[in-house]
Structure formats: C-alpha cells, structure tokens
Amino acid sequence: MLRPSQRTLQQRLSEGVVLGAEGYVFELERRGYIQAGPFVPEVILDEPDALRQLHRDFLRAGSDVMVALTYYAHRDKLRDVGRGDDLEEMNRQAIRIANEIAAEGGALVAGNICNTWAYDPKEPVTSGAVVRAQYEEQLGWAVEEGVDFVIAETNDYVGEALIGLQVCQELGLPAMVTFASVQESTTYDGYDYVEACRILADRGATVVGLNCSRGPETMLPLLEQIRSAVDVAVAAQPVPYRTSPAAPAFEALASEDGLHAFPIKLEPFQCTRFEMADFALRARDIGVNYVGICCGAGPHHVRAMAEALGRETPASRYSPAIDLHPVLGTTPRVVDQEELMGGWAAGA
Image (cartoon, rainbow, N blue to C red; front, top):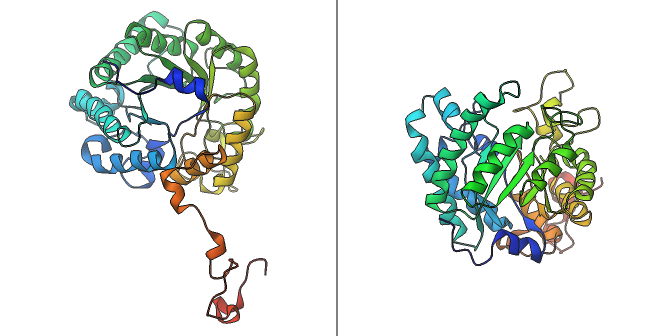
C-alpha cells in the first residue's frame, strides 16, 4: 500500500527542489556496521538502532526523503554472505525503520532497488527474468509495508533499468530511475547517458537522472544535457569526491602511489561541505529538481546543502559559529591569545 503522506513526491517536486540523502552503505561502513567489499546491509537486522540513527541524522540535516536501506538486499547478494534466509525480513525491516523515522519529520519514504549484477545484455530474456524476479520480491514487500515511491538506482544498463521501471509501474509506484555513469559517455549496453535518461522518461519514469560514481564537477555537465533533453523531473545525487576529466568516476580515482582509492581509500579526495553546498546551488540553477548526495555522504554535507538552498533544519541549531571560537573568533576571551596554543592564530 502507498503511505498516506501529506504531500506526494510529485506535489513536492512541483513546489520546489526535493533534497535527498543517500550513501547509507558507505557511512554505515565507516561507522563499523557494514563490511566493505560485499556492502550487504546486514545492519538492518544486526544493529537496527545504528540504521535508525543514521536515518535520523539525515532527517535532522534536512533530507526530504528516507530511503529504505534495501540497496544490495536482494537474493544474490544475501546468498553471498550466507544471509539468504533473511531476505524477506531484511527488506521488510528496512522499510519499517524508514517509515518510523520519516514520521518524525514528515519525510517521504522511498523503496530502493539497484543494479543486480545479474543482467546480461547478451541474454536479455534469461537474465532479465532473474532481475525481474528479484525486483518483484523486493518491491512487493515494499508495497505491503508502505512506500511513497521507488528509487531505482546505480543502473549500468538501460535494459535493467527498464525492468525496474516496469515492475514499479505494475505495482502503481512512482519511480525515480538513475544511472551510475561509470564509463565516460555511455551505459554498459551502449546508450549515451542523455539518451538513456530520455528513454526512461519516455517510458513513464517520474524522475530520471544520475547518481553515484561521479562527483559534482564531472556530473554537472551531463546534468545540463539531460535537463535539456527530457520533460520530466531530473535527479542528481553525486558522490562527494573530487572527480576530474581524467577520472570522471570515483571508481577510477587512484592515490599518489598508483593504488586504487575506491572504495576505502577515498579520504584524500573528499569534498568539503562547502563544495557540496555549491553543487546544490549549481544543480538547482540548471533546473535539477531532486538534488541529493550518494556514497561518501555525511550529515554535515546534507545540512550544508539544505542551508545553501535556503532552508533551516533541526540540525541548523548546531551550524558552525566560528566567531565564538577561542582563536579564530572575534568574541573577546579572558585568556590572552598569545598564551593560547603557543601564539598560533588563523593565517599565521
């Protein structure tokens, strides 16, 4: 069943930018609740309070959407880590927790499906049936538990994305379909990213766009092209890492010694909160309707993006007040600054 939200996704999009926050898997890995490598969200059942807290952190930071952590919670991935018997309960619990926290701040709840690693464009009928079965399972439980819409994300193939969209439509769920633009210009089945989004828009997706893989600087040029090519809402959820034309996707980032930075050596490439706030404004100004953030996101990024968009969030109570810092600030202190920190001062 659909949740009785006060305003639907479509209504909120008509009112202005919808702010989204993802990157649950990366952030929970950093917090010690998900294993890097398989990145299966066992935290849903093993440490549900950790998941609740991250939802709450993103909600307080200004996210309009609580995304159920069913990314990689599909049959094949759970089997890889010996949790196949937990498939249904893991999916249902993820949506219950998302609903629970969404109710604290009037947020939307999104079901979530992603690339399955099972789709093969050389055998679209056979592999497509496997993909469809996985999506039908996950989204069937999502409907029963209650979601407002579905985010079908990190798609590498147009063919797989279309299967996800079809299942959403059969279940009466609005769909936001986004591609992970890992390759320089095309999906793995050979479609230009702009054309891929146009195809999904023409087939009835409520929102189309890009998520993950690219950072702000290498995602924005594609977003401008997509915005000009489709009549539906456009979504942008980059990773908060400094990608470049030489390495447009964060999977290609490498450290100075030539080793892969992805996925657990990315800190030197991390965007600041100010860079993500700037991205939110630039995305809004080119007409992006759903502005968010993906793998690597922290609540401080989300709050900065929300505030850049002119919003005051619950977490804004604790936004920086550098003027009150004992060294950097302007408020007089009893302690002589020359005696503080060996005379160190900003700019020295």
